[in-house]
Length: 379
Image (cartoon, rainbow, N blue to C red; front, side):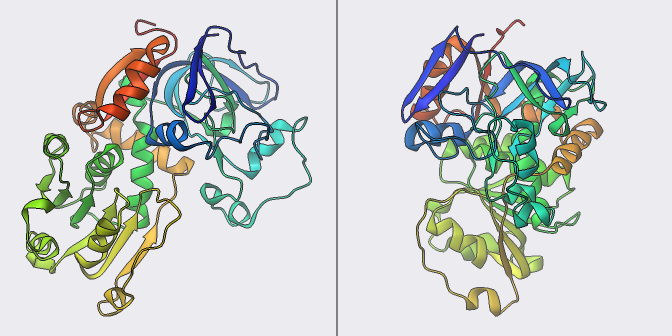
């Protein structure tokens, strides 16, 4: 089949001779990919990896797979085959795929990985998104959706409503990242929220907050074009470079609470982490959504203690987040027209490197989400 193959650092290649995945297990589902978004994680793998992908010569801890593999984990498509035990979807269904791989997925690869490892404590306690061996379809847990077909476990595959276009359905995955973060904040209707960073996940967080019936949403972002994207989504915007005291000015945007009920750091730099805590009102919750490098930063513990604020993290998503995002899109709580704003380009898979990866790396300020079409833009 056609696809993009990841070989390692700065080495992704287009091929028309990618091995097509086949149904092996009773709970396998085969999906013909319609569109797959290029995620920031894909770019990190390209520029700095392998990170989630196994290093050359090594095997993935869940699937036992080795490079090269197709990337791509935020996608939509149509079911073209199912294993004998699959009951939740049928051939012809339009679907999205919750892309995590964790301890429970290891059984699908019994010929490739040991089966006597048991569940890690995170999986045992019902938090598979925090699995010790966490991986993803398209990052080593299975070959991904920058190929024409994927095969994955049925418990990860969710049908979508007829009125949800397949290109917009790609956004269910990044919206689920944001949805999970909003859930981590115990967010309530009418509450106020600060989003730090107007990149793809920051903008997705705006939509997820709207899906939770938020009150005022403010996006703090220095880049003009990203503030304009946030405004198109209905958020208030703030330019931290134009303020002598950004934290005080941000808090004045919600004087009724002396700060925000919740904040979401979608940038991952020391200044945004600090602001995410200090801009909160009493009992506010700061959620780190960004993926940080392994680095230490200064932190003032009393910035939490004085007003009993909380600081926590959010790690990807679970199936429940996908279900709730799909319902929010179907019910209109997340407006499809606003979600479409995030899609800034579509390319055929053969152009995925130059027209996708490199566009996002070299023109990241003007792009949010570029979709790759493995089966062609007209498929």
